[in-house]
Length: 343
Image 1: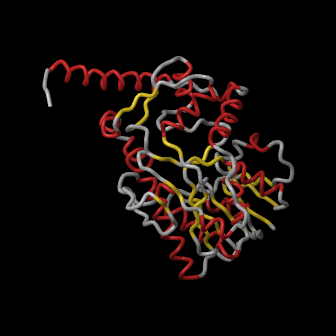
Image 2: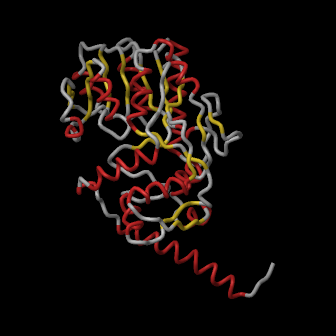
């Protein structure tokens, strides 16, 4: 069985590449070759060094080749979906598109998310582009039988990054704030539920869909069944660091007013309670279980980052922004109290 992964070395795809190879798949990775070191310990991977955005160059690199599965991990826009239809229609038995659970309606009409939950996110262009990609691919499935499977991951993390609710260029700066005893911003009251999935668990679900004839024409959530509040998420991160984090709760509206670009990530995603129903995935893959609990997974991530200094990326701009936002928030409260206005 031959699989072509476009990308294949990112947060959600590296462990997919590892697992598929270990299970006997012939895995071809098509990318620009910038992160081959992430899989240097995996033998048997075939590297195709080219840029998928150069269609002619890619067609030349793939001339005469066909695959049982093609999965594009770096497809974000409808024009890219249309390009992949041109390139792979008739050359693969299954094309897997990696969409996003952020595409589900905001606000949700029900906190329990299934694959039939409507797709509509007026707050985040990223999500709307993913929805548009799904529309293009499903239309081609209905028109010509293009063998599409849509995977919808939620917040997936690996050993290279700490998942938190708000960060800048690097989430490690949030860990540094915790270690320094500085408050960490948590949008809202931190009580909304969130789902975090370790990349190794995601890989089990994804590889289980590969070559699965029952998955053709289907959309499938791939997430953990564990739900935590954002307060619990940050408490787990602090525990893994050996500290008790100081959580500063600030409303999402206030944060977006301070930085409008946060609207998509917060209002369109992280500020909403999300609990996923993975019944469909388990029906397609009997025995599937996401068994890496978050407190265990994040401890592994922090241990890995502490052992690899190049991943300990500081972000002084975000650090200063956090201090300024907290100061503005607290100053507003002080001013109100000083006004003497009573309820």
